[in-house]
Image (cartoon, rainbow, N blue to C red; front, top):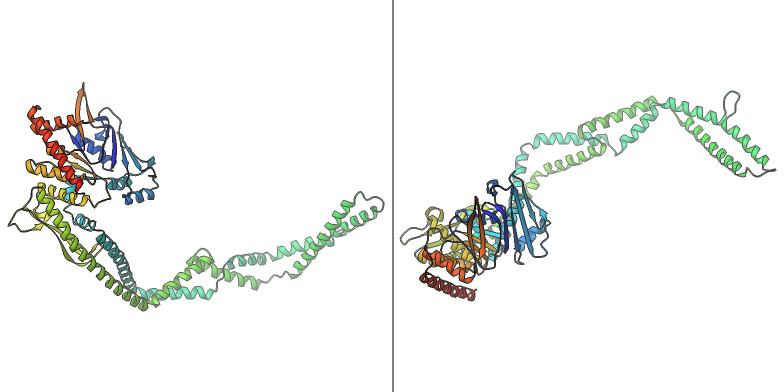
Length: 570
């Protein structure tokens, strides 16, 4: 429910804060005072487009802020807010939208920045604005489907079940079609896949084999240099050169000297131990060098063999992947595709069987959906017909027909059509072909009245000058329907008719005033006495008189009785 709407620099609204209550909120005022501007400001909060032309003259920005209280039954809204990481734990939703003259827009919901697209999605859960465009939307087939399918919980559940089966059936049929299309290229594709699998298999690749080969090739390619390094190093350790002995021989002399000296002075005992350890380590190093040198051989034939193997690996890597692992992964894909092609007949038979099974389920589900729609269409059509009678169209005939679509569609096997006849003797025809603007407006109001008690998705509704072109008894009937809707939802209604205004639970008066070259619109709630004066003004169209005041009091008293009757019948 909308609690407050605050507007800054929006056309004639310099700074206005409006508090709304539950039930029916009526907005009245002189023509041009800014009533529709207030609804436009609310539309900005719901994600509607806002032109920079709406920014008040002399200002650089406009801002609109709305506070909504959330209800437990709005489960869809709570789920959507959670998916957008928007916290609504305190039961409030504060939406702020600002537009600058440079065209920059900012949207905040409970302190979180969101896009305009997300704002539109949130707005769809909050307020249903009923105006001329919404009447025209009623003519669309998808709107008629949505109206019927949401009217009954069992029908909505059956539709959900049908959609699940339909999606599985559609997916299997698409898979079947793709396989049939691909089968035309299988012969050529099969030869290529088999060649690739054979080429990789014959190479007998092993992971990391290329790294091992590179190490061996590097060693064999530099065998002569390695041999020279080993021979020289071993010679320096064991033999030495010219007049000098090897390192080990010199170190042995140092070791003996330290051993002999320790008999007279053990101060260098630590040095002697280190020399001993060094001598042993160098002996082991020399032995290892000797053994390595003896095992080292230069084999040109082996080098050629390794290089040829490396060439095979490089060629495969250039064709199928950067590494051996990539080549082997490619082979796995090739083998999987080969299996898929080679099992084509079995797969197609399995798919055909699966599609046949799903079609049986789909047919049964579609039949159940049609049956529930026919039942729901009869009930809903009759209820809408009753409301049309109450709206001054006693001779009108309204039916919802369920006709075979001839094929399975995402929402069933049906076409839903609304048929209407305004006068006796006229043939019922599709709504879009026969309903005038005024008739369509009353049909839409009848539908809103019937759906109000069942529709928990949206808690607030706006009627934007729904009274255009009506008066007298019809105006009274429209007023009573709006009051009935307000028993189930918060309603905001702009009106020029006293019959509707007297039904108000909260009456807001919108007036504009001029100061110099500036014009400002103000919104204020009316007391009961002020409300009666405003209704008298609306009814008389001239200065308020005692007679018009008495008439207004009688209208308000009658409205209270009507609303009490509606409340008792909920």
